[in-house]
Picture (tube, rainbow, N blue to C red):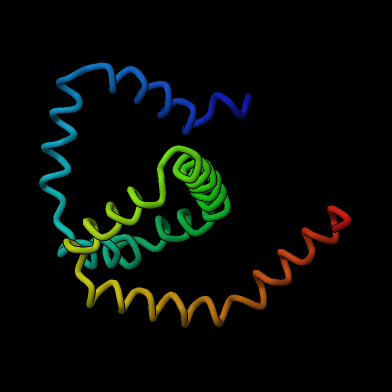
Length: 136
């Protein structure tokens, strides 16, 4: 299968078409206004414990999901760094943080730090192995 004709490519082509339609953008705004963060924990528990087959399928696809997110974040960061001045980004970050649940963000940061500390040796080994493969 041609890698440029996968799920992400299809989503991109669909989104390019949809973004040209005002009705889609209005619908998107309406959907975004109805995001309910307080239900996120229930959603995670449903995904994890309602049907372990689905959980295992998701876990099995983690490399593809991770590579997709990593590639998207790499492009996002490249675009942001190239096109937005630091002052604008700082103001935007301050504006966003004013509306974020700082207690939960602190909890996530702490839990992520714990997980990172546990997994860092594995990640570090993979990164060092990649550097050796390139002859760095």
